[in-house]
Figure: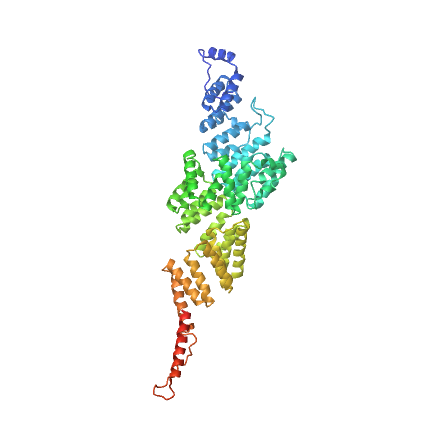
Length: 586
């Protein structure tokens, strides 16, 4: 089978020796030995003997495949591809074609990988000895579509990649990598996820029972915005209730439903059993961020960097830690490294945008958020943060558009509802703003929050502002007081309470709260102005001596005969009464 240009040991000196070796060597025993070394991960040893077998057997197709496979396992990807392509074996057999594409893909030669995957086979015959009844033609074609999808995703041709993954699933429902690629990076919308699940029932070569089981199993990975309920696990999957992969899927649903405490409890349990489960780490790190557990995040990040320095999740954890402690520059540096290691890791791009937003660098933040939007179009978070940036730059129309798209994906997310309320408030649509704010608050209270976290203080204050605009001052005071409980030393909350008291003409309470606000923030221009006005109004409405007539009393001369000791006593008694009233006012 050797082609022109390949070494041939047929000289008169070596020929008899090689022929005698061939007669004495048990090729099957050596092939089993090579496979044994592969199973034991001794790839270099396996490659040494596979290379010798390929030469001694006259480049038998099976032996060439084994040698190329060993080259791939020893990370000699270019040699593996050359081993196959130089013999044109990728043009006549699907197994060789898959290995050649895998080698090009691992060697980051993505265009070459796509070209090989799209080239038609000249002959569909299998190499001798490679027939396997357990592997169907459909499964091999599914593997090829999977590799083609990975290559297209690597060059950011994500729409083509998604179609390749769908084709792989249609040919082989057990090709989990294709399904994971679609849902892990949230390439699909909710409707597209449902269509993929429906596609499984029409997959080739799968029984109805098998396809239904796989559909149920894959169903735990999608619909992340549905409220999680482990008790509703299908009966067919009841024995998987303790499975770490299933638990991680439940934790993700808890996270997207803003139930961070429950999510953290689940991820902590999962990682206690498998400390470095990569599928669980992103959501666990995000929970540590939301709950403000900087020490735990610090220790986890250091462990990951020590053990997996080439994995994007490690540097993502480091960047999240620095962001949590308020060091935007350091966070940006490490998050940038995470995006370089894994260019399709959406959470890293979101956090990278946050590092710019922290320092009010809106343009750079928007660029990072739009990049995240391209990668995870099925996630509502990029839409939410892009809308926030537009809102901060006073572009309320575009902000509302992106918030609406986020709400369509995550209709029960309190963050999105809160921002929709802010936009409605800015547009002076106060009843609409009240509805959005109250919906957000009811969702938070439904998550069994005995006390709201401090970060929801703006929601309560915004409800207070909205009720103030609707002239429902008592309700406004209720919400401002609740906000003050969450953040007692917030000058803006104290100022807002003082303003509502001013509108209710409670001048003494207004003066008191404006004084407290200025005690926390001396340069607050609004509180300073309102304090002056409140004091002025209080002085205008407050009588200097309560109970004293406005008309000055007339006193007669002491020489007047009508003046007597009795009259003097009455006058003194009147003065004493007036002094008593003044004291009672103070």
